[in-house]
Length: 362
Image (cartoon, rainbow, N blue to C red; front, side):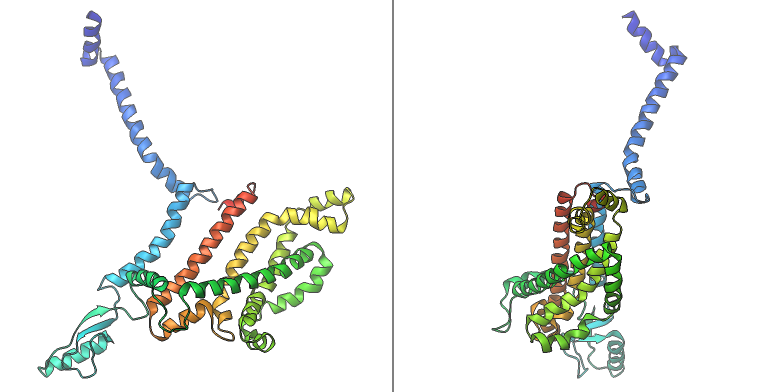
């Protein structure tokens, strides 16, 4: 009991030295708690702006989602906030203006002129609401188009569904890229390994890669017909020459000490390629193929315009002809979703195949 009273007395100020120490200890704990609470935010900011520092999984997901949300936010502002842009008026009632029709989109300047004229004549005034051009549908309209494109039958009896058009386009991309890789990867490895072969091949390839692939459309139709042959050929032409140069450059980056060690051990030239070069460049080659596959997708629309229109290009052009731009946006975004999804799957496979390669973790 006496000890308890003494301790309380000390804390109440009977012993100023010990009481001050206790107060300082409490203040230190409070400051430490506040610092701990603010440390994650500060460390995250430091992590985001650190030079070439690997981000945490949470930061990667946050920034990745933000890269999509920012454009969508701008799109929503342009679509739903009336005083932001909206350069046209959607007519509700034409009033006394003869050529106005309900549902018509008119530039604001024209609408204001007709409104002033009708007001001066004391005639019926036209009415309308601010609107964006028909080529910029609102996000909810595009989402609705996503749903109806897969659930509503095509307007024409012989017209393909959206998923049928997408599947046809995927086949064109697949075969074009497979043929390009089957030819371009071996040639690129050989050119990157042997300087004489590189000097023999690369000047012509450098010249040819500046020629636009669509310029060969008419020639490919004459040679391969009007169906899928010329479309696949355009994909091959658009990716093959770039592929040779990129793979050759990747091969040249392989450490020459590996060649010296293999040749010292008596490795023959063919085994030098199969046992040293290919295993040495495989992670970088895999990453190059991911990039080049995205390159092949960029040639798709032009390729499918060659000969008879087909695939997703046919769907887009048909919808644009009737000003169904919500369907156009849905189809374009579907291409992006398929491409991004494919790249994410390939990146996941690459991390499993080459766990030692840090560049594939991005």
